Amino acid sequence: MEMTADDPAPARLRSMPSWLLARAAAVGEQLVGERLAAAGVRRHHYRVLAALDEFGPSSQAAVGRSSSVHSSDVVAVVTELVERGLVSRMPDPEDRRRNVVSVTAAGAVKLRELDAVLAEAQDELLGSLPDRDRGELVRLLGQVLSGR
Amino acid sequence: MEMTADDPAPARLRSMPSWLLARAAAVGEQLVGERLAAAGVRRHHYRVLAALDEFGPSSQAAVGRSSSVHSSDVVAVVTELVERGLVSRMPDPEDRRRNVVSVTAAGAVKLRELDAVLAEAQDELLGSLPDRDRGELVRLLGQVLSGR
DNA sequence: CCGATGTCAGGGGTACTGAGATTC
DNA sequence: CGAATCTCAGTACCCCTGACATCG
Image (cartoon, rainbow over all chains, first blue to last red; front, side):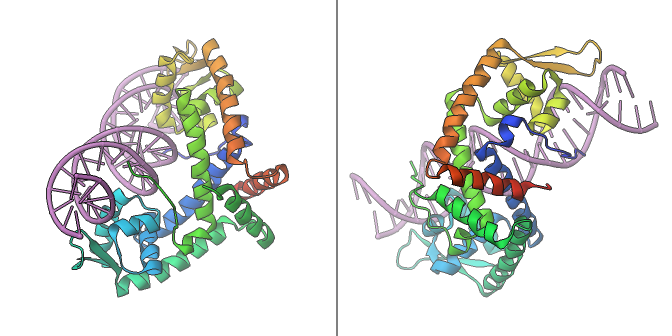
């Protein structure tokens, strides 16, 4: 029953870029997380679905590489997606080390639903920014990330 | 022995503001975390030290409110700071429910060391940005956070 | 009694490490 | 043989919930 209430935060932190980034990211992740949870999934599930949609059926190792989900976490995420009927996991006949993971029809529908839900979350996150500033923010963040 | 290697990430994510924020924040937190770890502390320790330095000796509940560390985590963080000799915890004679937490002389020295270390981390984080863009980024992040 | 406080136990989500077994 | 793949166990950090006893 603890309300977070105000968040004064030490002055040292309030102007620290890494702190502002962390706070802003936390707001975004909360908005995204809430909406994904309402749709019955977590971020990892969305990432894997998005990667499979973009790159087609893949081995689990490939999913790990293309989805930014750690390869040791892919197993459980795929298992959960299979349970929800959103992807299928089948042994690869050409390489018996591998499982081929594919998006199901239901998964494709779900992914489109999640896309819409996340677009809303982005709008809410940046609601107070005019379009010009949104672009500038995206540009600056890309710059921070460039070369990493 | 897993190298993170490249991080293609699905196209849907690469242009999503919440994703860019999360990635950039992760870079910052890693830089900060590494340096704090090299100095023997974690983020929580720095936050509590900074709050105590700014607001003076405080009850643990007050530390929770002023440091952005969840009140149920303050106990352990203060305990660890006490073990390192950076703060002291004494019963409040005027209100026996309370412990008064204060920065020790060693804690004050440590805090200044950590300040310097974090300033370096900020520089490394924003190394690729000219001063003008740094200010702009801070402004935009503040805007995203305003009213939350 | 109400409310604030300190303490503790515990879970959830994300990120990672390391080891083992199988297969190429 | 070395390398890749899948799986699992475990760690770490951060954020949070719930409960409880104490004290004002």
